[in-house]
Amino acid sequence: MKMVYLQVLGVRKMLVGLFLSVCILALSACQTLKVDTFNKSYAAGISVLSVVYSVTANGVEMGKISKDDGRKILQEADRVRNLFGTARIAYLSGSDGDGGATSLNFAIAALTVLQHELDNVLKM
Image (cartoon, rainbow, N blue to C red; front, side, top):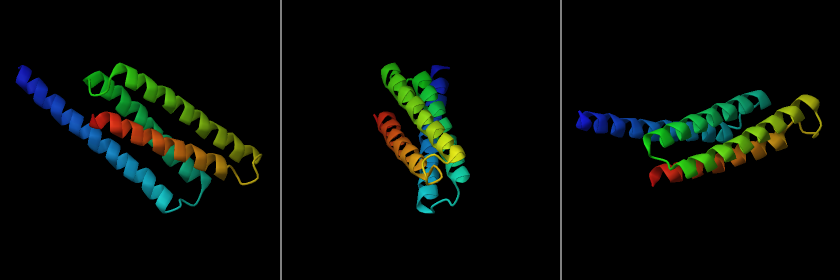
């Protein structure tokens, strides 16, 4: 019984890592292709951020990520979420002169760093 559980756990860990890699590629593709509208870039970023939350929670639950590392990643994810919120406000209000693009690019850059941190923690 324990052997089956360990096999399922191993497959689950592999799938989480694969899923995160696909999400990183998706965001990179959006940046490479220069997704043409704010809303598409914003939606892609928020989607990837949701995956970061999910992968982190699952990683902690499965023991692949320590509770301390998980807490740090989730706190950083909250900060990135706030950056996306700031970009959205700038876009809607037109307050930054470039339609929120600068704020959004900053949020996407912070998300990319967060993804790499999460990826490094998962590889440990």
